Image (cartoon, rainbow, N blue to C red; front, side, top):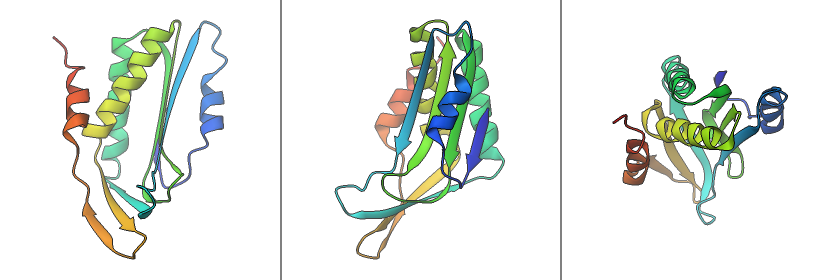
Length: 149
């Protein structure tokens, strides 16, 4: 299940929705939050390409299901104005063993950071608005480790 929404992500509810599969021995979750950037950030603005963002995340989740023996995947991503301390993204992967669940969750996050059509801009406490934030080389390098050989 994939959601892209301006609404807050209920991390507890998302996690509970993944638990209870009788054969699952592992449930790995990741929650990403907005940082205050050492007190200088008042909010983060996230824009997305409607429809395309959810479709791209769903494609990434489907690829994870093909690559690892998973029982299920959940991914949620927010857009709009996000305050420091609020959640931006959530990923959960259930599997029989922890290795597959950890790898799949990391794979999904690496691809969401680099391939899902989201753009972010910082709103600073001094009232100014920063430019659109460029992707980092480290994000691209992390995503590159998943290329099929």
